[in-house]
Image (cartoon, rainbow, N blue to C red):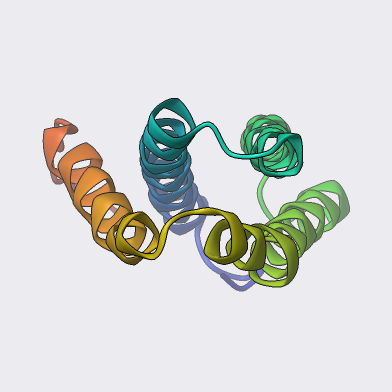
Length: 138
């Protein structure tokens, strides 16, 4: 998104980000919740999963703040940068901490199924959302 793009482009992009973040958060909650419910891993895994949930909440707040800001303004760019940083940090945290902990503490047969469980849940969330295509008029 460039600062010279029309506001309708910014809003359409924000709608896409909102849908993607929601699908990601719901799919992770489903997959991780299932693993926690079935397997009773050590407290460290619960702590890491709660950090994942907190990261998703922070991303939603940042997106809500961004959505109420005038497109192209300095505040908009700052808030977009903040949201991007939250998403990058969340991804790095999962790669460095959450995934290794799950790999270490979950039985192999369950760990191997987590990715497909996540992908299926994410796809289900994306397909279950009502979507009405629209064109922005110049």
